[in-house]
Length: 274
Image (cartoon, rainbow, N blue to C red; front, side, top):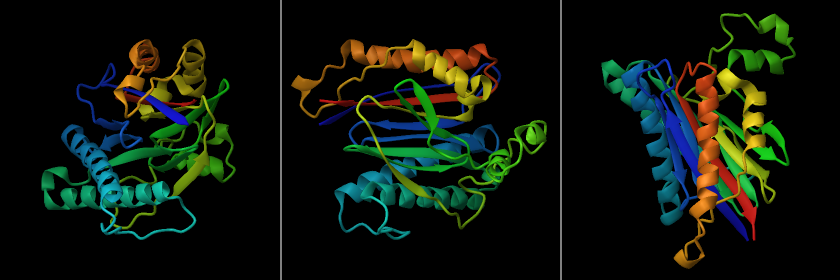
């Protein structure tokens, strides 16, 4: 039997006054997400909140009500959870854009999002923008999501890292929730092993410390899972939760120690076997 654990933390960083990040860490739904708002302090906060609230509500409703309409259809090559997340993210895009169009003070706002749903032996995920999903497995950190940025697109096309390192377009997003009415969102289903650790984060984490910095923190921390059971008598959350929670705090501390130039959000999801 697969057992999940999680911890989530968000920090404004050392430079910005507000925090435009939002997250989901819902053990009941086994649903986790990080959204990073765009378009200024107020607009960014609104966009990221709309994104996570829309995603959570659609996932919850579509699991409870078999008659609910799936606005963007069902792809037979994806799992049920993969289809849920795809529909939820596309619906979030619609809601963010509708809010931006309806109220002039929110014109141009948007949000990144990375969302993951964990089921028995599998993670399903969708990513839009440059918030990321990583997997930590047996001491190896792997980015599972792909960045929707100019630099990432250039690198995938074969450009050399040195040729793009100093470009002004380096961090430009090529996709986000809100800017366009019609958007593509790809869902992925990947197998999980016992003892895998998933990390969802905004660019405020990996930007200052890089993948190597994230790996160093994870390697130095002990992260056994807190058991999230429906039966209270089987909940062994105590010290295990505190250890996972400390890992999330250590990641944020590392980003702040490296300057903390942006908001930092971390969601850790542990997968253990019984």
